[in-house]
Image 1 (cartoon, rainbow over the protein chains, first blue to last red):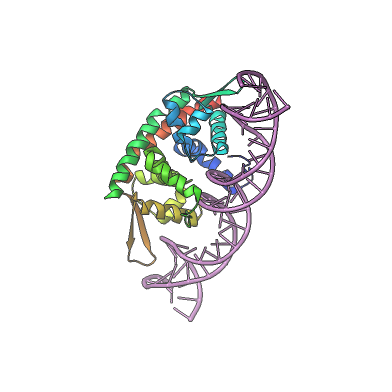
Image 2: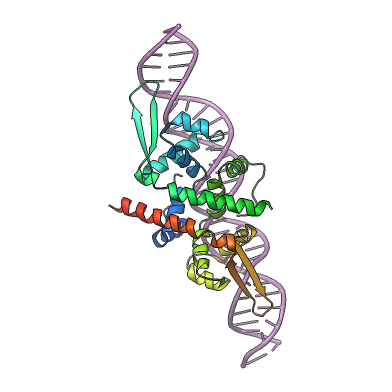
Length: 120
Length: 120
DNA sequence: TTAGGTACTATCAAAAATGTAAGTAATGAG
DNA sequence: CTCATTACTTACATTTTTGATAGTACCTAA
């Protein structure tokens, strides 16, 4: 999530794949452990940091911060800070963030049918 | 890809997420670095190990093997070994593998529009 | 003056994913 | 007998991701 090595093989492989395949590109962006769950919640409306935290019971503050920062960098989430004390920060999907809806829907659909298949 | 620790926090987090959210479940299965590209190629028809390798110029044999094994475990790919020498092994998508088509299509669509957005 | 709430950051450690390099089995061709 | 071919495996190293823990700034209310 931070401190990647631009000289590593892994980095150049990821870059090359992202350049050539939009699906690998997308997977790189939304493939973090908590990324899709965060986006799913935000699809229902904007949330504050603590509200997200409550909805993801096992996430650490660090992980939540890192994922939100990456989402922000990638223009998927808009971060709004209110000049109040105690602080209030709201996270909301951008248009390209909301555009994840069909992706998530298909992932859910596929996930459900795969789960059924393997539970037999 | 192998040797995961069932006692780790990471493992229990992943398990819990997979149980609760089908989209996280799906992402866990198809989220490997090369997974989607492999599936994309196989969507066009079955391929031998070496044919896949040629299509993924930078993958190592180890990575290709690991990814294929995981896909096989997850019933996404069927592996057929022919009793010949030198060996011939074919990889083909199963029905649930072919069912990834709409997922991949949406990922591509989203990836493309995201790329456009950030290239400006 | 002190405690409390919010949204963090900084270090460090562990685990997971990926990459490197070399070796293996089987057998048919020459 | 040796070599070539295919589809791997093994042992190890590196990189990346994730987690544990503690601490910070800010103001407000008591």
